Image (cartoon, rainbow, N blue to C red; front, side, top):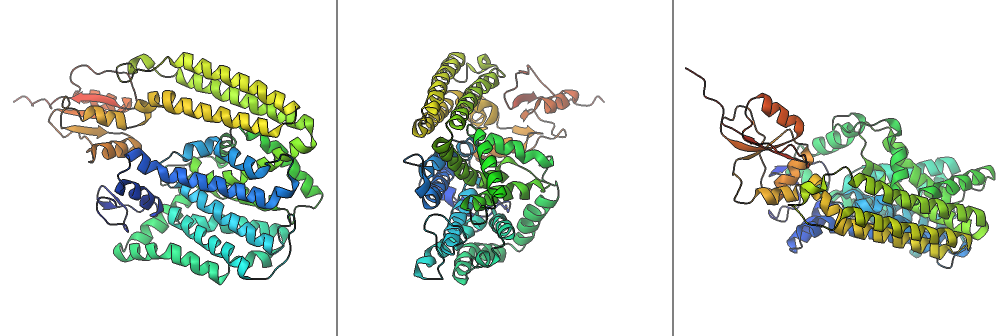
Length: 512
């Protein structure tokens, strides 16, 4: 888009590409137009979206729970900290994908819906009251339509399905259909249409097959069939959610206990927490029935989970000293476990093989240093739990996460770059020492797309019928096939760092 000036039709290798709508492409293209570094241009939209989602859950914590705070900052600051330091947010806030833009749009749309339901008296927080439509209600109605429209621009009709489905199961459980239907106000619908429809109309006019490819293949068929090869078991998203909330996963236990208690006491009908729980549960349930499953599908559930976990943590420190201490200890153990797992993960790689590629400090020393810092912080968290200092607990956990991310980003992840990113491979192969005839063979599409981006051209797939010498980028399985063809020439370094470089000889001339 930035190079061609066509901001309507997404393209891949010059051909129309309708896997996702245009919002992320627009945001990233603006960065390229402003001549930001490629990594910044591609990832900054997700970072900004994550910040917006964090502010959204913080506003919900202030709006609905500010009069029952145990800690002077309360859920209004705890929920953004939990969200921002979770594995899901750290990962997707740095990804070049529409997932965080989509999740932030859903978050802000549901925050607007919660504000309206509070005004209608359906969510009874402090000082809640019934009011009719007045000027003060127009802003959340406009925002509801605006952010829902942005969600449709980010990933398509799934935004309507997730927001509408969460509100529907809440209305079904609480029997507050009248209040739920009032969310579909003509003003909100008009704003939604003004935001979402123009691009869809323009793209359809320019590309007659757009609706068939995007709506049917990439939405209906993706959900109903495994055509995109993302099949997973029905329970797939259960463990994904638990990992996504690390290091705060233990807080789901007091959340579940509080929810069960509210259910028995019949105090959930007008509870804001129940509305947020419906918002969190529906994406997990909805995509569990899908025949295509990827971890990012349940990212919209993480902001509301962060909010209700923050409320549970706040209440635990206010009422139950033993529970607060136990939670602090479990969170501390989780932090230490993450550090140990990272060290074990590092041992999978042959770091000596990368010495020529990048000189770094000793990973083992760095890892054990991080583990030592983690242990000290864990001890502080446990002590703070017994002293019932929620602010210290949250602050230490946030500090640990920031330090861990900083260490990983500056020292650990660059070492893994060669195994997972096409960037170092492309920079190395673009040197004068390597032939122009470079091909791929049986590589996964993430490698193919990455190489094409950094080479600024598509690398063709090698064919056995090509009789000339070439350098083929492949997998160990692909190298075995080429070896079986009798076409591997010279020495082949069997060390596997994401891609194997296989020199291919000319085909032998048949004897007369």
